Length: 174
Image (tube, rainbow, N blue to C red):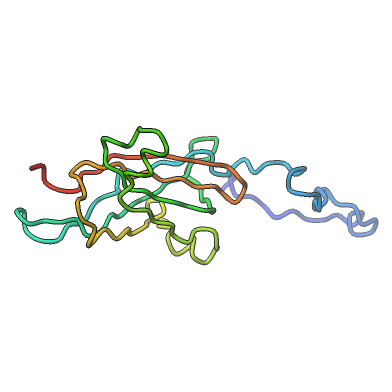
């Protein structure tokens, strides 16, 4: 028998008779008074499997879709799930580190996928890579530079703000 298998807890006769248990009571306190979830997302990254899908031959190729893979990590550095208000931005690489107002003026595309509702959140999660796969349409967008930054930010359901970015090559260098 495998000694690492957790056995179910059984109640003794005294547990059943006096109503006491070893289980902690269920808390009905407001969220701010509860113990924080140690496995909640504390950082995020745009996973290296993120890629740009192209249309056309080598001479006339144009970006169609960005397959963005977002990974959330808990305080231990392990992958975890998250939900909240997610926003992804595509900005030219040369303006990615400029001040907020200048960066917003240079933002090429903004996506805000549904990420708060559990049903939608689950649809994006890829259990093999432990990342969220978001297919971002760029078809028809003009004047996309060869080098861009994909920025992802989320305000989680717990109220934490997380941001990350990654460089993308959107086409063949001229």
